Image (tube, rainbow, N blue to C red; front, side):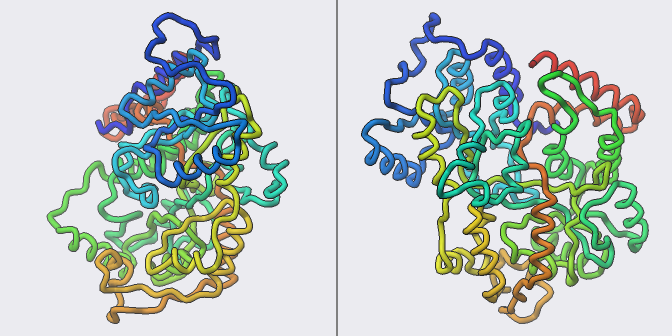
Amino acid sequence: MRKIEKGWIFPLLCLLLAAGLTACGTNGNEDLPPEQEEGVLIYAALNPVSEELSISIKRFNLYHEDVQIRVQDYSDENGMERLFTELSLGRVPDIMEMHRLGGNIDDAWSTLPYKDRACEAWLPYRQLAQKGYLEDLWPYIENDPALGLDGVLMPPLKAAEVNGGLYMIFPEVSITTLMGPEHIVGGRCGWTLDELMETYSAMPEGSTILRYNTNRWDMFSMLCAPLLEQYVDMETGENSFDSQGFRDMVEFLDSFPEEVKTTLSADGIRAELIDRILSGEQMLDATTLSAMWYITYDDLFFGAPVSYIGYPTADGSLGSFFNLHGSKLAMSSACRNKEAAWEFMRKMLTAKYDTAALRDMDGYGGTRKININLANYNLAIKFDLTYNRWVDARDPDRKFLAGPFSEPLFEVDMPDEDDLIRFETLLNDTTQIYWPENDLSEIVWESIGPYFAGDRTMDETIQMVQNRVGLYLNENR
């Protein structure tokens, strides 16, 4: 069994949160940080402090004599456990990072499909919000004279809501979904499992739904795990895994092999994937869009216009999600100077670049993401509709895209207004963020394993999931 992440984090947090925001002064606090000073805001850093963050804090402190930001480092191996202990004792940071990258993962690449994310860690965002630890940031955005609700890109922020409140902000996103050639899957945005399997039945013999080397674990960890929280209510301890949507998910996973063995080298695998795409033997592929112009690459990939149809859902709605990039920051509801904390945090949502900066960032591969600042988002769209791009087929990292072409350098078509409509339809129809609850995912994965092995019926499997998840939820309420 491959674990998604260490299993101690959420149970420990729930145990500590059960104590509530109590006053300090308990015995054995000698290892805790000192009492917070008047006029000091504590910034809880789950990641090593970057030069950019250090400069930003120094600049803030330089211009604010009455309030200073001080970093409390939780980036070491036991940092998260220490943070949870402090939360239970009332030592609540004013500003918190909510996501740890871990190891040497590059944030620019950590959200691509098939990326091993096992060393990352996510604070239990929804639970912290529901228990009142985090401040709702919608009023701050709405009342910010330089932002306002009409100054931010709403779909990603709405996707991050918890019971109508927004308790975390982030500067950029990308969108992960499933795509397929429009002439095969249709022009729809979303489908059910029955519709997926009906479409697949018309594919040539020997075809696959996704890449031929995609196994069951790949699909679960990449697309299913982030969707599991829709079946649970952390507050009441109830779950709804006995539903058609979850049954469809298990059946969908069962269509993938447990393991794919190959003797091919990395180059051989790449060549095989290209051949299967070009011969029409692969129906879908996972994709991550970091900008509107990625649509042209996706069309190039399949040699035809694609539909962003997503993971199959019970009601046929779009099964895709936003990946969050950059710092993910929350403000504590106990923050002692919320106006100052927001003044520091809000810079994540302000405009950052101009046309020249966009041109420098794109290069051959593209490094930017979808910006939450609406002015920058609109500038990027205008840029994408104006400038040509080129792909260097001599670059080994681009062989997967450039393989079908004989020339070492070729031009990629600019997106047009129809592509913009396709992109914004995907953007507006995406309603979830990638924020896995690791212990829940582990329980579900273990519980459905016997079904794939043929040792339990679907009904028995659903009952097992219901019982195990129910016990887990009620133990940690």
